[in-house]
Amino acid sequence: DQQVKQNSPSLSVQEGRISILNCDYTNSMFDYFLWYKKYPAEGPTFLISISSIKDKNEDGRFTVFLNKSAKHLSLHIVPSQPGDSAVYFCAATDSGTYKYIFGTGTRLKVLA
Amino acid sequence: ETGVTQSPTHLIKTRGQQVTLRCSSQSGHNTVSWYQQALGQGPQFIFQYYREEENGRGNFPPRFSGLQFPNYSSELNVNALELDDSALYLCASSYLGGNQPQHFGDGTRLSIL
Image 1 (spheres, rainbow over the protein chains, first blue to last red):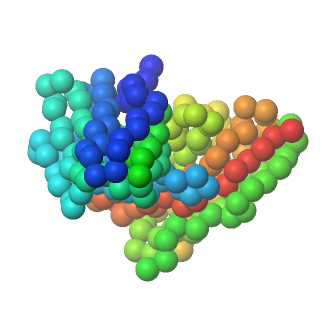
Image 2 (image 1 turned 180 degrees about the vertical axis):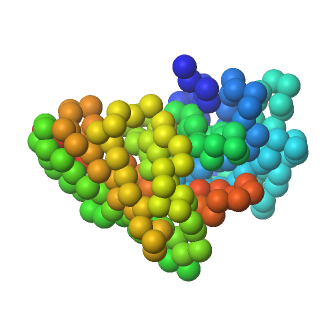
């Protein structure tokens, strides 16, 4: 039973354009959501998070949107840069448990 | 600020053996979580330690056990290794309280022959 799903295994975007990565979840108890970026041979690096009391959080080029009724979140990267090429994982948690449930990741390739 | 460090980076074991993986938390963090990441999958939660006690566990058998020390460093022990235990093992530390993100180390790649 996969509670967090990233249905696109890969995405290619031209440098300078917007990258949109999507994530769906099924557990309505989740109240904190995060995005991590992972380069090969490195651990996941925290990117941005959002609490369920908000519907948008922005940090520089990165914006996360949360649609609670659809149980959907997305990460927007604008403008995309070649250094953004990595695997992106979304994660969700019920903050009472602090156990993160991860999706299977989306490999983003930003083309120069 | 020192980040999360894990050792060793790579390890090869055979079926039935036992293994211990180590993790040093980021300074100021009091909670450590362990995850298993199989190839092509997202990290899967194994367990979390807070104040040297297990604070939650995922769907892993008892042969996966852990320890947290007073300095917040941690160990993951796996007994009776099986081929399916081959994976990247990730340690993450955080400060328990409020929504604080977990910060990950680079992992230990465990291969079982």
